[in-house]
Image (tube, rainbow, N blue to C red; front, side, top):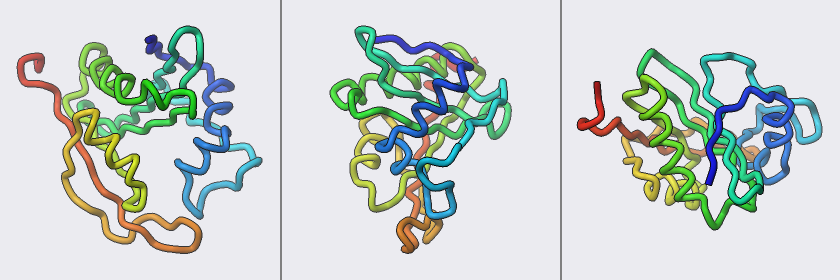
Length: 156
């Protein structure tokens, strides 16, 4: 299993536009599939390329909201499903080891039970619900909020 920070924005855009990823990460206000959706080219954003035995599995994206708080996103390709939980835990560990992050949080549409299960399996805890905050296919959905803090033993 390999996690490597990348700034290859063409590769990042290629993953964003994979139909499985694009549908999972966009709402009704996002660009339509097939239109160019460029990833932000900000050096503060951590794009972690995930691969396993030479096969690309997707990206973990961590956007800084402050000097210690990051918003996490998971953009995994279908090939990653067998290793997704392991990769997710490794991506969080990478953030603790390589950044000043003290907390990571994420949002999951309430209808996406697989992503909710995933967040819990990688160690995140539900911290709230943002009611009717995500529009998909013309319907408003709740966003389930998750968070995880750096283990105190490693916090400096």
